[in-house]
Image (cartoon, rainbow, N blue to C red; front, side, top):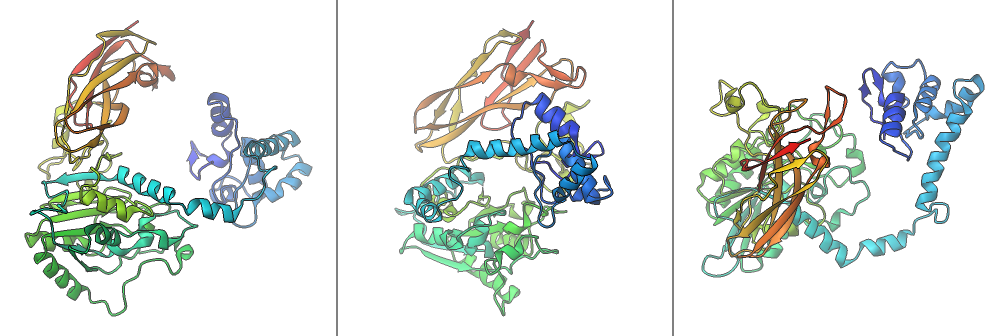
Length: 511
């Protein structure tokens, strides 16, 4: 798909260098290219062309094979463009051939229609629900934990009274996240329902909505597709009364679980945010609940990092994302220790919006050791959580990374490490390989993730993990030579559970 943006002054939908020279010529792509919605008509909006006919001609000639349009299509003008000579018939044939070839490969001429009844039957199987739950379990990231999690379900330490607070706890639609258009919301298990089902009849789970539904300043372009499904503040809702009631329930509970974050229509397309603040009065709810002294577990439902300073003092923080139809079951399983969270952050999590942009693979500056002191008004410029961060209910010990002392340019090697589960909890660990190239044709980032592997390590056992290291991992695009290069250099090696792991080995790369 050709995006809306332009590259060096030419929108992607009409950029021949991008769609033909690079995509097909250099990268070898042999499929067809489609515009984003109304992308060809937008060439007029972007002031590239005077009208839709000229836009259609430029897009087709550039290598855009199919137009996606919500209304009148610019490509309807291709017939007249052919007559006037603005479009070459061979270019049109090429575009048609690419689309038809894809349809042939998909078997659409032999099986043009989907069997709706069969698809419903296939989707409505226990195995698919189990797969949805397992997928959600594997994405959960335990950000902080003072030992409160997992919650004890049996024995003398078993929790008998749980407060569940926050409007997102009962929202089934938000579990699915954005960009889900054909859905059965009733298939969703909310976080509240998941906790109640897992806790069982012997545990009192008291729910307080506590918060009004947070509203966008501007409606989402997709809200009309969710008519009747979006969560809404109940009629007659008194936010102050509910906030007081939530605080009171938390104070009389053994543990408080507070769900904060952003509704699904606050993330995704046309949902940028000028702040990372928690919406509405979520920050106030967190501070007041934590102040009761009741161990507070914070569940964060979001697709972006949020300012979690209001959660300081919480017993545990679990990032749950938008966990899907069985997300409530997955979250409950993690809370009660049926599974050990092993998700890892795919981005660096800033303290607040003032740190953005912040990323782990930055270049080495003139003062790399002082990077975290760059803000005069902050005690530390370090992020809240580093890239690759994630805790576990188990504990792991890494052996020394085993690497060759040297290797030649173009050769491949294996980095191996022993990972021992030193706890009594069976769990997964995500072993991460980072490198730093000390010198070369171009400066390189302070560290780069070059491989990872999620492995299951039973309690008390040791697993040897091997990760490849060769030209695919060591080469880079050099602005000096404007091509892929691999340098003769020294590569520092770090293997561990996050991007904070220190470099402990090195490989000399020779000619």
